[in-house]
Image 1 (tube, rainbow, N blue to C red):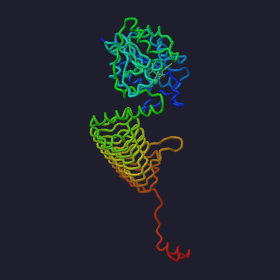
Image 2 (cartoon, protein in one colour):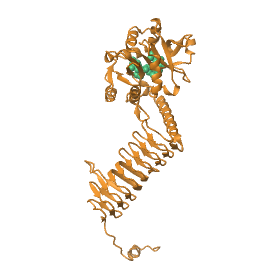
Image 3 (cartoon, rainbow, N blue to C red):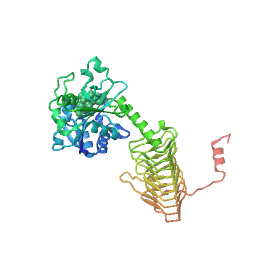
Image 4 (cartoon, rainbow, N blue to C red):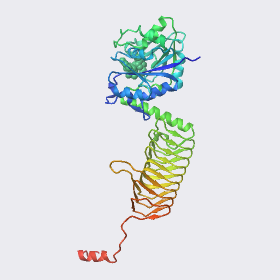
Length: 444
Ligand code: UD1
Ligand code: CA
């Protein structure tokens, strides 16, 4: 029977190599902070307790961790990864299941990979291993003749023969809670960095006659992020993964390498995404919808058969109904476009409800903000909004009603009415010729 699970997420490192005022673990990959990736991973493997180890005074990290349902444990001084895990001890008091230690700077581990690491450590110690192209500063995994893990050597402490080993520590360790804390109590700091290494737990386990095993991870899941260059590499790996997943799910991507996803982008089968589209967080594109080139979407839903773009911008709360059309240079925010409605060109539609089959003329603007508060515009089904209409909210245009081009609509328009609100045209025959004669324009 599987044991209950807990996760300890290490996030107390200084992250100085990021050269950023933002804490390292709050930098995003696929639009989601790395800390949130780690906590989502813990949730995905069924962790019933999540403890984030943070540095003293790391208020933003604490707030983010708490908001995501984790307990925060403070590591008073950055004395190493072993010392950091030990800081989670009190938070896990009374917990008798398996613990997975993960680093908050390793955002792309898949749940099935962590599950294999937990299985490897179900009765002893489990470590996630991988073979990087460049083993560099990673800890090296020393195996015994049976393929079990004998010890982990940090690069700075390694002999040349050990440095030549290809199999490295991805930074994940698993063990039953009691065993983990019992072994951690024996870890010392007599090494090149003068730190308490979590990795020493392995040799200590073996000395106590406990088994240690390696679960292997694909290298693209365990990229550690310590610099902005590595953050960009993790982002690229995430994008590759998201593109492959979309294609596998039956989405048509004409130039996949030019489409940018967020961690939660949802695309139905037979949705089509043209080149150079950016999906911010919170986007759903239903089956059969088309997102045309150079569009930017976030917090938006595009329903079946709808078409958006080219050059469209959908902001949070945009809901584009089935078969509706949003054309070039149209910005939509917190607005519902009913089924079959059209906004083809150069418009801003904010805080609005637009009925089915309404036609929004080029240059239409909802004037939703009076400098203090936002107000709502309601446009009924089948209404025809003339080009260059300014709708001064709060305002309602009834079903089937028309507004004249260039109107500034400030009061409600009843169903099936026409509202025109602009200066009446005055035409003066011959005026231009007389004007030119007076100015002495011989060419006129
Ligand atoms: C660690 C491993 C190394 C492994 C690598 C994988 C140790 C001793 N070494 O090295 O074997 O190959 O990860 O990426 O474990 N942290 C704290 N408190 C501390 C120190 C670190 O919370 O006192 C946190 C950091 O925020 C980070 C994680 O622990 O999330 C790993 O620390 P880092 O200094 O990046 O370890 P590495 O040198 O990369
Ligand atoms: Ca690291």
